[in-house]
Image (tube, rainbow, N blue to C red; front, side, top):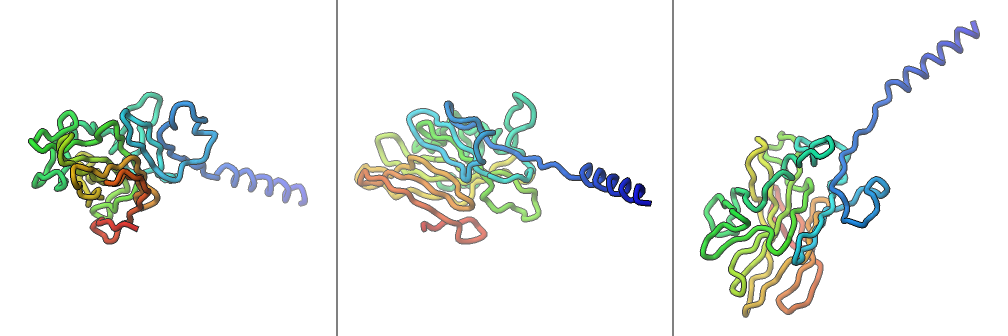
Length: 233
């Protein structure tokens, strides 16, 4: 009888061990060149990018372990980006981007909409930031990554104004929509406020800006309603 009890207990332990699920984590982009391997460091807490004279590497920041409808990167070595990360930003079509002065849809070609007062996307080496921070529409739609991109309206050396634009991938996975933007300060006396870096922290946006007086400061914005409008905090 004692031998039968021991055998039954051993079989029970074997079944429990065999049914334990494994955790499948989705990581982000590679860290900047020269930094430690991503596998040896914790998942970053926020997406960020610096705006410089040349393209700057971006950090991933969704920090979540659950897969999304648009995976950050197709699995497999050498696979191209998927979802919002597969966007050709210099030639993208974005609906609802009223900041650019167009009624509905903005069609970028080689980074500009081509108007007399142009709207340029990701000027001067700026890069998109990816994170889940825009409310899905419809609400029952699968969760997808979103993008935060820098856009500039105006001609170099003349009147210019910048804005950070949240861009959402539609539920069909093809169309891209702008949500309410975060505008830079209005230009004055030929001086322009610029975003020198920006990142998504949870559901908020944080940026370092160069003010009209030439000084720099860090600013933070949070959403104030379901429509995605922002307020500075």
